[in-house]
Length: 375
Image (cartoon, rainbow, N blue to C red; front, side):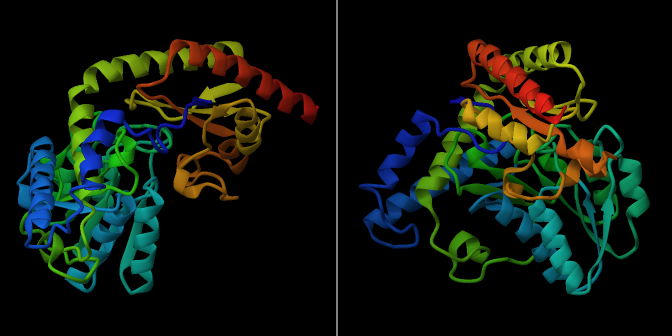
């Protein structure tokens, strides 16, 4: 299998698994228990929290372990709404479904909602966010980089706009954690998810600025300083912290390698396959290539590639199986037909030059097959 779907999830790093194993086996104590096994787990949790806080540049008390990016997005929107009771929300039209659907849930509860549209390059312009701000705006969400196109957003400017007006600004950093420096100082809330940087699935972390007006999402015991009820998954937290550390240390070297593979692949696709275009403009993550293939349906191309041992996607993994076109591409002005012709290729640190060459040969065959069948 040639795996070119690293934006959906990444393989678990062996060093990370080794770090987690003791807390899955012999050190299995509940971190809330007062006996020796519990204290071992609690110490590991404290160390993991300190490690994540150091990377984020915040206090350890501002880091909360979660089940991943979707929970963080729900917590941000619904927690702020619960804290205010009423008001106006701003969400970019290219956000992950976790933010979009959570905001729609709150709209049903009486909150007013504005979706800010990107420009044709897929960038949310700060001026458009500023136009959407109202006296009663309590929340704004614009992600650090889009999960489908890889386009990096001007989050520092947007965060500054919100800070000046006392608006809770949440930044989904799921795609950028371990790749780019994170904009913690510009945010009131920020999310990362371990399985995007070679850590375990089902493990996330959320930064919430001390003093921010937000309530908890999950009620229960006193875990996570009474802000997230439920027994903490210590092994997952340990794995997230280790994977985060490793990814940050190797970010520059891996970024150069990955972008070289991606750039070579994109150039050859555009040069060797007619009627193709790269989607999204401006500065992008080193891993992403969202490409439209004229005369092809992206889902059909995905299935043919899969049969030949190449794993890709047609958008967010959380929207797999959706019959509607990508909400990101349609927000950028694509027609339904254009949006459905797109395939997302995302590269990771384990991909090789040989894999890129092989994937390109297979891709050309699959595109030709679909186009010939349509003639």
